[in-house]
Image (cartoon, rainbow, N blue to C red; front, side, top):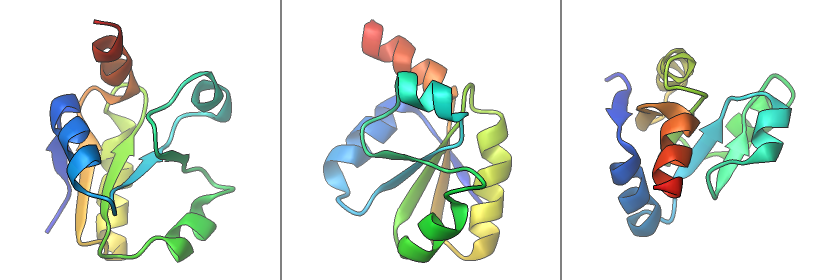
Length: 102
């Protein structure tokens, strides 16, 4: 199986329904510090091994980047690592932030 795409609305629903949901934010540290999705953990070269070691493969994982482009390759890689359910957030944090301000 490979990763799937996930809309902002579906992510909001998953955040309520799934206590084991894991959200990884692949944006740079400054962008993450300026705003991120609740529950999102920064995933970068410095945090990757620790997050992989501490995240059960059975958790549903959502990858978020700036616009939903680079998260697709990270989601594919996480799927290759053996995670059961992996999503890439369509539109990335830009879509999330735009909907939050609407």
